[in-house]
Image 1: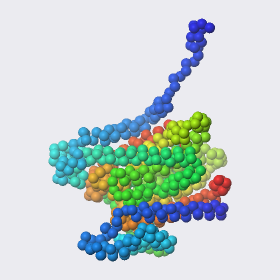
Image 2 (image 1 turned 45 degrees about the horizontal axis):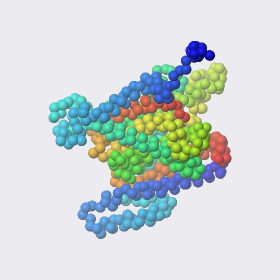
Image 3 (image 1 turned 135 degrees about the horizontal axis):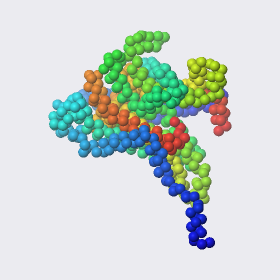
Image 4 (image 1 turned 135 degrees about the vertical axis):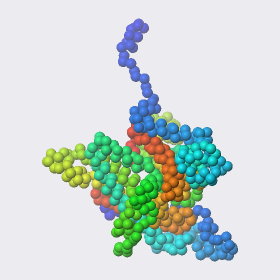
Length: 325
Length: 308
């Protein structure tokens, strides 16, 4: 077990190392950021001074060594635009993104699971077919366009929910959240639903497939023969068995929710890290781009590692076959 | 034995059914599903509209002389300064949306299809190489594939266009980088099975070169899953390009794909001028849905074991 975890940790470190190299050199071929920041009136001396202040006069190898030695100490450079440490900027925007992603995940389960289980129990009914059609549409629709339509219907035409921004935030245990007020929920409803749409479709499909399979199992027949109520059979016996794959997949998908939030946050002007990334890309703010990617890569690697380890605990075959290979 | 006896014996044999080509079999199975056929027809209509755009639109949206700022933001059905009716309304600078959408479709489809074909070629080459060469080459190539597939496509594409800048060639490059790994992984899986089969051994014992064995013997047998992924991924690529263009990091204003049109309309949405974003969005939606409907059926018919 320990050997398995150590091997996985080694792989994770390698992935992060590879990403540092790729991202740093990849992002640094973008145009010269100095020209974004100087005003036309600046003379050559002032331009040189700006370059020196930003460390851009040094050869790229030196910049890389400087960057890596900073990175291991948790310092990923200063934002050219904001003048603050990039990592601090990212982390200050992180709670808003996490909040959005978590609410979206919750919506995916609360909406997707009942629909999927229903479609699995009554595969031939008309409602089930409609549910499946919606889930296909959910896979096909581009996220950003759905976001626009949500704004159009709920904010412009009906005027029920605010179109952009985040509600008042409250500090709880040092983390800002907008989930403690009714107004906060009205602001998060549309962006979270937008972000959740793909995952709702995914949960519907997983739940339907799982339910159809589980409904034929002997333990379900036995429960039925024993005279248990349908609600108990579905709610306890079937649900327990289909939740394992769904929770695993959703765990892995959490990272992609964070990545997709770039699109949703931009549409709904949600002040999270995704919006920060897009602004950084438009202004060629390289330290922020690099810091964002590093934060997300670390997040991904940690999630994958956790799922792997959990899996190997639940299913020993995983680590045994790998030890042999 | 007389000729008559032979003829009689032949007549007594059961008639050998005419051999069907794999393509005929595929076509027959495909048309059994009415929804898929509807998708195919819709897709063909969209493609022909896009191809015929210069001849069936009242205005060339690229030609600045034909665009009049006085016509901007007209609602659907309004009559434009030039005298024709703008059935879908006009956008913020006075371009007819119907014309704009058809021209936009050309760009969106071209980017999607081209990136799909290039990605499939690159991915197939990598997958076949990995499966046939084995050993260290395979390990290294598949590690790269794993690394890439563990990160979401949107993120990789965003970072790439951030590094490369705007433009059709750059966005196609970014989409190829995002997609090739799917092909590589699937083709390697199929090729690993195929290379153990007897016909490969036979080809090798005939002394054929490695390249010939791989491309003439193994590759044709790995094509089924590639066809399935191409349909799914093309729809995906079109959506991704639209997303990037919408975010303002994809195609520039001079190459107005559907995503650019939708982005242009976004600013007018809050004031109730819905048509500028909605109609290009519907065109995008119909394109993607038509491809996905075909893709679903193709997957059912060819039924390769997809790792999805």
